[in-house]
Figure 1: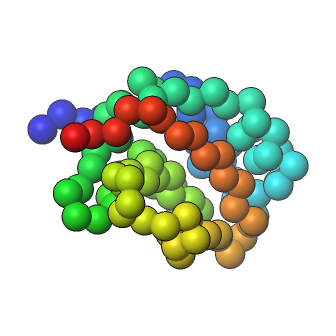
Figure 2: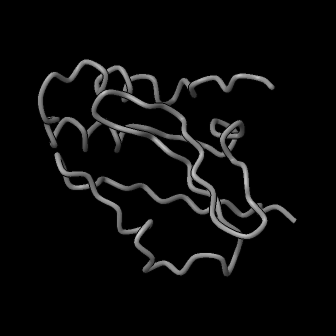
Figure 3: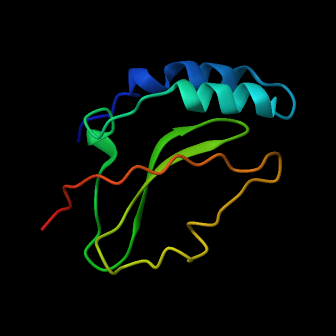
Length: 105
């Protein structure tokens, strides 16, 4: 089993989050998220599917956050499901949704 490499496109975000000693500065977090351009190629090691349910693939776990790539096949999860509406206690969730045209099987 190979160990996935943290995508370089996310390194500044993780450096900021790992350095936080208190709740994040939402303006800085929003600016960082807007400056990031992540492609499917960047996340290739984390795009993994289950046959019968969605799958949560961890990219990074910090003291104050968890970064996941959520994967599901068409029809598995309605957009209004709780996993899509997730938010954290320390900040409103800043979500960037990217829909990739390639799905398995």
